[in-house]
Image (cartoon, rainbow, N blue to C red; front, side):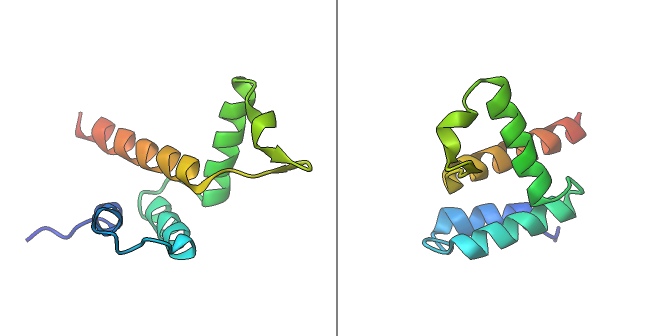
Amino acid sequence: MTKSSKFDVLMRDITSGTLTDQQDELVSRMEEVLEEEEMGSMDEMINDIRDYLTSKNKLDAYLKEGVMQLPLELVFSWFSTTIKKRKESSKN
């Protein structure tokens, strides 16, 4: 039997509703996945999102009193897309 990656387990838990209303647990597990996949830290991922939003002139929409405030849904979408793309490219 093949051991599931932390990403696979996380996605299964999200799909099953195990992490509903548990944002802190979700973020913590996202950090673990980034580490396991050797993709940097959560801070680095947030910086990538900031850079992307800046390049699209959309960063101002996420600034509140000079502090970037990103919805968890946006961060998770970026996270899962990045992981899936990396896994797909490593298969090729």
